[in-house]
Image (cartoon, rainbow, N blue to C red):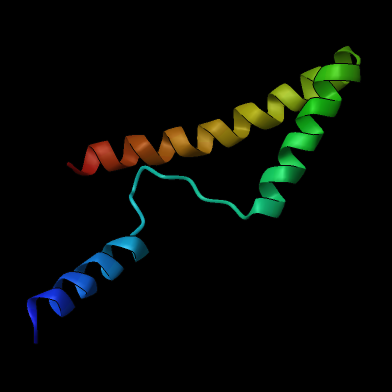
Amino acid sequence: MAIKDLYKEVEDKKKNEVEDDVVTMSAEEFCDEHRNLIKVLRSGDKKMLEAEAKKQEAELAEYEDEEEEEEDED
């Protein structure tokens, strides 16, 4: 195998790797999430703002729990 082919193979593999500390979501999920956040932030009453804050807090807690578990494993 030529060096350039080996280099290309390594680079292709690197492109497909996902880092542990990276959160991915589809573009559709990303847009939906941000449309909702913009709507709530611009026109939400106290109840809507509190509900969104709780939702965001729960999502964050999921990732923080995962981080803590990973740190405990090390």
